[in-house]
Length: 228
Ligand SMILES: *Cc1c(COP(=O)(O)O)cnc(C)c1O
Image (tube, rainbow, N blue to C red):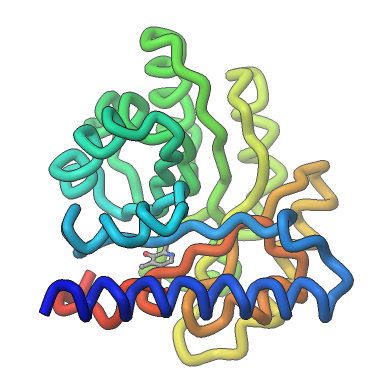
Protein backbone atom coordinates (compact mmCIF):
# COMPACT_ATOMS: atom_id res chain seq x y z
CA UNK A 1 0.00 0.00 0.00
CA UNK A 2 2.70 2.46 1.08
CA UNK A 3 4.72 1.82 -2.06
CA UNK A 4 1.75 2.58 -4.30
CA UNK A 5 1.01 5.79 -2.44
CA UNK A 6 4.65 6.92 -2.64
CA UNK A 7 4.52 6.40 -6.39
CA UNK A 8 1.32 8.42 -6.69
CA UNK A 9 2.88 11.30 -4.72
CA UNK A 10 6.03 11.23 -6.84
CA UNK A 11 3.94 11.25 -10.02
CA UNK A 12 1.84 14.18 -8.81
CA UNK A 13 5.00 16.12 -7.92
CA UNK A 14 6.41 15.63 -11.39
CA UNK A 15 3.07 16.62 -12.97
CA UNK A 16 3.14 19.86 -10.93
CA UNK A 17 6.76 20.52 -11.94
CA UNK A 18 5.78 19.98 -15.58
CA UNK A 19 2.79 22.35 -15.26
CA UNK A 20 5.03 25.01 -13.69
CA UNK A 21 7.47 24.62 -16.58
CA UNK A 22 4.65 25.09 -19.11
CA UNK A 23 3.08 28.06 -17.32
CA UNK A 24 6.49 29.72 -17.00
CA UNK A 25 7.24 29.19 -20.70
CA UNK A 26 3.81 30.54 -21.69
CA UNK A 27 4.57 33.79 -19.84
CA UNK A 28 8.20 33.98 -21.00
CA UNK A 29 9.49 33.30 -17.52
CA UNK A 30 12.37 31.13 -16.44
CA UNK A 31 11.38 27.90 -14.67
CA UNK A 32 13.82 28.70 -11.86
CA UNK A 33 12.12 32.06 -11.18
CA UNK A 34 9.23 30.09 -9.63
CA UNK A 35 9.87 28.61 -6.23
CA UNK A 36 7.70 25.55 -5.49
CA UNK A 37 6.76 25.21 -1.82
CA UNK A 38 5.28 21.77 -1.11
CA UNK A 39 2.62 22.36 1.57
CA UNK A 40 2.80 19.35 3.90
CA UNK A 41 0.30 20.42 6.60
CA UNK A 42 -1.70 17.45 7.98
CA UNK A 43 0.74 15.01 6.33
CA UNK A 44 3.25 12.92 8.30
CA UNK A 45 7.01 12.50 7.96
CA UNK A 46 6.26 9.20 6.19
CA UNK A 47 4.12 11.02 3.61
CA UNK A 48 6.83 13.64 3.16
CA UNK A 49 9.63 11.08 2.60
CA UNK A 50 8.98 10.37 -1.12
CA UNK A 51 8.74 14.11 -1.87
CA UNK A 52 12.09 14.70 -0.17
CA UNK A 53 13.52 11.67 -1.99
CA UNK A 54 12.45 13.23 -5.30
CA UNK A 55 14.65 16.24 -4.50
CA UNK A 56 12.01 18.72 -3.29
CA UNK A 57 13.60 20.80 -0.51
CA UNK A 58 11.11 23.61 0.17
CA UNK A 59 8.11 22.83 2.34
CA UNK A 60 5.29 24.83 3.90
CA UNK A 61 3.39 24.35 7.15
CA UNK A 62 0.58 26.45 8.58
CA UNK A 63 0.90 25.62 12.30
CA UNK A 64 4.02 25.99 14.44
CA UNK A 65 3.02 23.19 16.82
CA UNK A 66 2.42 20.69 14.05
CA UNK A 67 5.65 21.65 12.28
CA UNK A 68 7.58 21.09 15.53
CA UNK A 69 6.31 17.52 15.64
CA UNK A 70 7.88 16.49 12.33
CA UNK A 71 10.46 18.94 10.95
CA UNK A 72 13.31 19.26 13.52
CA UNK A 73 14.25 15.62 12.83
CA UNK A 74 14.01 15.91 9.07
CA UNK A 75 15.98 19.17 9.05
CA UNK A 76 18.74 17.66 11.16
CA UNK A 77 19.12 14.87 8.63
CA UNK A 78 18.99 17.20 5.60
CA UNK A 79 20.33 20.69 6.25
CA UNK A 80 19.31 22.08 2.82
CA UNK A 81 15.60 21.85 3.67
CA UNK A 82 13.96 25.27 3.66
CA UNK A 83 10.82 25.50 5.78
CA UNK A 84 8.12 28.13 5.18
CA UNK A 85 5.49 29.22 7.72
CA UNK A 86 2.37 30.06 5.72
CA UNK A 87 -0.25 30.21 8.49
CA UNK A 88 -1.13 32.93 11.03
CA UNK A 89 1.42 33.41 13.81
CA UNK A 90 0.68 34.29 17.45
CA UNK A 91 3.35 36.25 19.30
CA UNK A 92 3.70 33.50 21.94
CA UNK A 93 4.84 31.09 19.18
CA UNK A 94 7.40 33.44 17.65
CA UNK A 95 10.38 31.97 19.50
CA UNK A 96 9.69 28.45 18.18
CA UNK A 97 8.79 29.78 14.73
CA UNK A 98 12.04 31.73 14.34
CA UNK A 99 14.04 28.71 15.52
CA UNK A 100 12.41 26.26 13.09
CA UNK A 101 11.35 28.20 10.00
CA UNK A 102 13.54 29.80 7.33
CA UNK A 103 10.79 31.93 5.79
CA UNK A 104 7.67 33.46 7.39
CA UNK A 105 4.93 34.54 4.96
CA UNK A 106 2.41 35.95 7.39
CA UNK A 107 3.56 39.20 8.98
CA UNK A 108 0.41 41.29 9.33
CA UNK A 109 0.99 43.70 12.22
CA UNK A 110 3.72 45.76 13.85
CA UNK A 111 3.56 43.88 17.16
CA UNK A 112 4.29 40.58 15.40
CA UNK A 113 7.09 42.13 13.33
CA UNK A 114 8.67 43.47 16.54
CA UNK A 115 8.52 40.06 18.23
CA UNK A 116 10.06 38.40 15.16
CA UNK A 117 12.83 41.01 14.98
CA UNK A 118 13.62 40.45 18.67
CA UNK A 119 13.90 36.68 18.24
CA UNK A 120 15.94 36.93 15.04
CA UNK A 121 18.41 39.12 16.93
CA UNK A 122 18.60 36.96 20.06
CA UNK A 123 18.84 33.67 18.13
CA UNK A 124 21.18 35.18 15.50
CA UNK A 125 18.95 33.78 12.74
CA UNK A 126 18.50 35.06 9.21
CA UNK A 127 14.92 34.69 7.92
CA UNK A 128 13.19 35.86 4.77
CA UNK A 129 9.87 37.54 5.48
CA UNK A 130 6.69 38.29 3.60
CA UNK A 131 3.92 40.67 4.61
CA UNK A 132 0.48 39.14 4.12
CA UNK A 133 -2.11 41.32 2.40
CA UNK A 134 -5.85 40.71 2.79
CA UNK A 135 -6.53 41.51 -0.88
CA UNK A 136 -10.21 40.53 -0.59
CA UNK A 137 -10.64 42.67 2.54
CA UNK A 138 -12.41 39.71 4.15
CA UNK A 139 -13.14 40.44 7.84
CA UNK A 140 -12.46 36.83 8.94
CA UNK A 141 -9.05 36.72 7.27
CA UNK A 142 -5.67 37.84 8.56
CA UNK A 143 -3.46 40.12 6.49
CA UNK A 144 -3.00 43.85 6.13
CA UNK A 145 -5.80 45.65 4.24
CA UNK A 146 -4.33 46.96 0.94
CA UNK A 147 -4.84 50.62 1.87
CA UNK A 148 -2.88 50.13 5.13
CA UNK A 149 0.08 48.32 3.56
CA UNK A 150 2.25 51.34 2.96
CA UNK A 151 1.88 52.46 6.58
CA UNK A 152 2.64 49.01 7.97
CA UNK A 153 5.74 48.70 5.78
CA UNK A 154 6.87 52.14 6.93
CA UNK A 155 6.31 51.22 10.59
CA UNK A 156 8.25 47.97 10.40
CA UNK A 157 11.10 49.29 8.27
CA UNK A 158 13.20 50.56 11.26
CA UNK A 159 13.24 46.97 12.59
CA UNK A 160 15.67 46.05 9.80
CA UNK A 161 13.85 42.83 8.91
CA UNK A 162 14.63 41.08 5.63
CA UNK A 163 11.21 41.74 4.05
CA UNK A 164 11.39 40.22 0.56
CA UNK A 165 7.81 40.34 -0.67
CA UNK A 166 4.05 40.11 -0.24
CA UNK A 167 1.73 37.15 0.25
CA UNK A 168 -2.01 36.73 -0.33
CA UNK A 169 -4.77 34.15 -0.14
CA UNK A 170 -7.57 35.24 -2.52
CA UNK A 171 -11.17 34.69 -1.39
CA UNK A 172 -12.50 31.16 -1.97
CA UNK A 173 -14.66 30.56 -5.05
CA UNK A 174 -13.77 33.87 -6.68
CA UNK A 175 -11.58 34.58 -9.69
CA UNK A 176 -8.12 34.96 -8.12
CA UNK A 177 -6.74 37.01 -11.02
CA UNK A 178 -7.64 40.52 -9.73
CA UNK A 179 -6.10 39.58 -6.37
CA UNK A 180 -2.87 38.38 -7.96
CA UNK A 181 -2.77 41.55 -10.08
CA UNK A 182 -3.34 43.74 -7.01
CA UNK A 183 -0.57 42.00 -5.04
CA UNK A 184 1.81 42.45 -7.97
CA UNK A 185 1.04 46.20 -8.15
CA UNK A 186 1.37 46.64 -4.37
CA UNK A 187 4.75 44.88 -4.38
CA UNK A 188 6.12 46.93 -7.23
CA UNK A 189 4.78 50.18 -5.67
CA UNK A 190 6.70 49.33 -2.51
CA UNK A 191 9.92 48.09 -4.11
CA UNK A 192 9.38 44.43 -3.17
CA UNK A 193 10.30 41.68 -5.61
CA UNK A 194 8.76 38.42 -4.37
CA UNK A 195 5.13 37.37 -4.59
CA UNK A 196 3.86 34.43 -2.51
CA UNK A 197 0.63 33.47 -4.25
CA UNK A 198 -0.98 30.52 -6.01
CA UNK A 199 -2.20 27.23 -4.52
CA UNK A 200 -3.16 23.83 -6.01
CA UNK A 201 -6.15 25.18 -7.94
CA UNK A 202 -4.64 28.42 -9.23
CA UNK A 203 -0.83 28.29 -9.26
CA UNK A 204 -0.66 28.33 -13.05
CA UNK A 205 -2.72 31.54 -13.10
CA UNK A 206 -0.50 33.00 -10.36
CA UNK A 207 2.60 32.31 -12.45
CA UNK A 208 1.02 34.49 -15.17
CA UNK A 209 0.91 37.33 -12.61
CA UNK A 210 4.61 36.95 -11.71
CA UNK A 211 4.25 34.71 -8.62
CA UNK A 212 7.71 33.80 -7.32
CA UNK A 213 6.66 31.51 -4.46
CA UNK A 214 3.76 29.15 -5.10
CA UNK A 215 2.31 27.13 -2.20
CA UNK A 216 1.04 23.78 -3.43
CA UNK A 217 -0.39 21.10 -1.11
CA UNK A 218 -3.11 18.80 -2.44
CA UNK A 219 -1.83 18.71 -6.02
CA UNK A 220 1.31 17.03 -4.62
CA UNK A 221 0.22 15.15 -1.49
CA UNK A 222 -3.36 14.31 -2.50
CA UNK A 223 -6.54 15.22 -0.61
CA UNK A 224 -6.23 16.10 3.08
CA UNK A 225 -8.22 13.96 5.52
CA UNK A 226 -8.29 16.74 8.10
CA UNK A 227 -9.77 20.17 7.56
CA UNK A 228 -7.28 22.94 8.38
C1 LIG B 1 -3.06 24.87 2.81
C2 LIG B 1 -2.48 26.09 2.24
C3 LIG B 1 -1.97 26.10 0.94
C4 LIG B 1 -2.01 24.90 0.01
O1 LIG B 1 -3.32 24.64 -0.37
P1 LIG B 1 -3.64 23.47 -1.43
O2 LIG B 1 -5.02 23.75 -1.86
O3 LIG B 1 -3.50 22.18 -0.69
O4 LIG B 1 -2.64 23.59 -2.52
C5 LIG B 1 -1.41 27.29 0.47
N1 LIG B 1 -1.36 28.40 1.24
C6 LIG B 1 -1.84 28.42 2.49
C7 LIG B 1 -1.75 29.68 3.29
C8 LIG B 1 -2.43 27.27 3.03
O5 LIG B 1 -2.90 27.31 4.29
